[in-house]
Image (tube, rainbow, N blue to C red; front, side, top):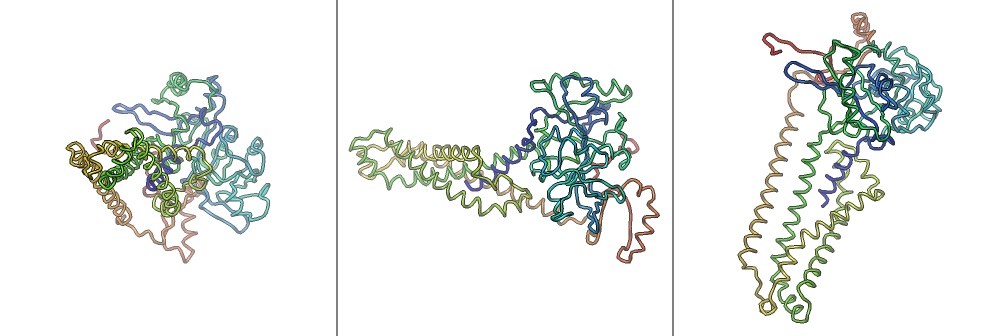
Length: 488
């Protein structure tokens, strides 16, 4: 039960991504489909003008925002003598704070992006740069020489948000800092979100917007469709989805849920086998009770009651183990299970635990109850049980075989996965990772690379320098690969 609790809490966390937003059910991400000769390709971003155009052309759309940022966007940020390159950037339209529920600790969400060079930071970033000082109206230097005034402080972004950032500023700045054109239908580097009217049909709107790009860019062989915000975390098999932090697959949820069920099933089979094996020790008790008057239904209630009591005692012990193993579970899974910290404060979880315990107790106790209550009084008093019954014999045999089959299957799976992870960790990548630093640079530095390189190499601590795309981050690049003889 402790193993199941750990798995089920993780599953619960995964399926509840992005559901903390007040308008979560009305918000959709615009996904682009590129129509090819042999197949269609899907990307998680949309042509830059899609958002404002949808709000203008379709009455179902009440709001829109564009967003880019996340772990691939880390620029140099300075304040006084403090400078860091590990803060995640976010940039969005002013309507971002109207659509998404990211509460402000300081500042006003309605005016936070009133000025072009304004920036909103998280509580963690405020402590990191300003310690105990009030960060409002302070100036941060972003990407070497761009000054931004702090106009708001957000609560730290929830772990269960697919969008993660430490600071966020108006997306209009990206036209200058990222050489982006927000009016260009051929540019597809930004995520677009739209909010529909309450009760509006996303399916019907999907049909209407399928030819939207063609309408404004006739040569473009692409279309767009809507993906619910609550599906982004688990249903994103799209390219260029680099802003989607910690994305997971719904297949993983099904697999782990099945493993939890198998583990519980093994425990139930164990209980059934142990109970029936002990039946001969209780034969005389059953015989005396039957002679004294209780019928079979009373005995079934008794044995099911005993099973439920044992199950609820197990639940208490499982909860103790659950909390003891949480730190190890965090380490192994690499996840931050927020729900586990307020486990008893969630009524749905408590009801779920009671439901699982009842189901487990009834499942584990049903056969022993039926088996023990079927003893004939005379045979039971003589100490002879129906343990030799052919059906019971084959059932117990099937349960034992099933139990060990599931256990062997899970053990083999664990060994295979462990070998794969060991291979990934220890594989020779062809370069020495020690003392290698990789950082992103603004566009203007790329155009003056040799000047920057010569200047940096004057530092005796720097042996060599090169520029290129980050190894292993190929999905973030806008590149088409061609080779001789390639199929169209």
